[in-house]
Image 1 (cartoon, rainbow, N blue to C red):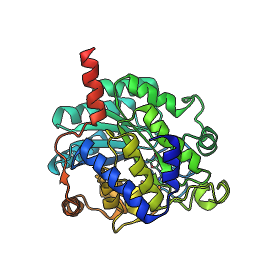
Image 2: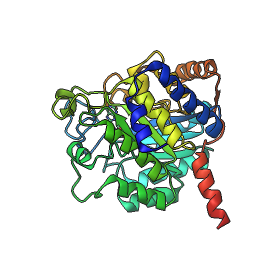
Image 3: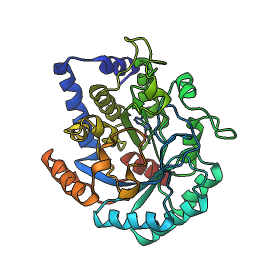
Image 4: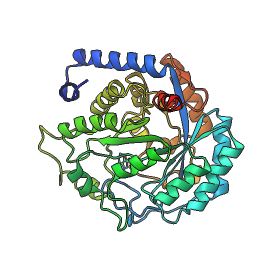
Length: 355
Ligand code: 5AD
């Protein structure tokens, strides 16, 4: 699929014509990643953050937010729960928190890898090379870092840099790939200032980066952030601006499946938040093959408010799990077994072994 086709599908609004996109995305999903829906338990390890991203509810300086950082012991307990629920992966996510000691994260990873059969995914922001290397050596399998937008000017506008930090996120992604992580990235849909051209470029960049995991969710305004207070401030002209709605998110998910057929694609919590009734299922039948249920201890859950009314705030692991299994069965799919490595990663590894 070329850029022109991506762009015209993104702008398509005719529900009859869109049926062809949905059907093709679902067909390719089934052919390349099968009917398994892999479950990744998400643990929000810390909500401290050194960054000031204009859209994010846990940005540095956010007032009235109780900050927390989980202990190694607490995180390891979450991994036991993931094993009990038969998940294949634990995802450790946090704000970019310098107080989250690299050695403690390494200890979490080592213990989880020694005590469970889980894959470990880290999503801890733009950390220094030494930290990223240390965690990989400790056994971490995957790293998630969304590039958020391929438009450099927009990126810089909404992500004030950290002095002494990385020059840009693509460089971090390249480094993560070099040192052997299975690599995930992604974008938000409908950030003020994001144009249709930008979104087509985002999808092309997914292909160029040869990603193993691609998370795509709608931008949800948080009222106590610069972007939530004044979303019109940097909005593009109406005919250019991408809307932050469900349909556009689903089109981006479906197109991403076609452009990166062997990638793991989650049906995101943000999509499920926008449409509580059926967002999660719609993602799964239009290209996605992953769900990331929240396993953060309940007492911390509400503090990780990157956007308001996150659907998982009300989910109890046990109950949610039962309803998720029912929902997966209702769309004719089955819960994943094993770690759910992306076929893309698998092929890359076997190609390497041959050379
Ligand atoms: N709306 C939607 N998604 C958001 N994220 C952060 N803030 C918001 C928001 N207001 C997403 C970012 C980040 C991921 C963990 O959550 O894309 O990479």
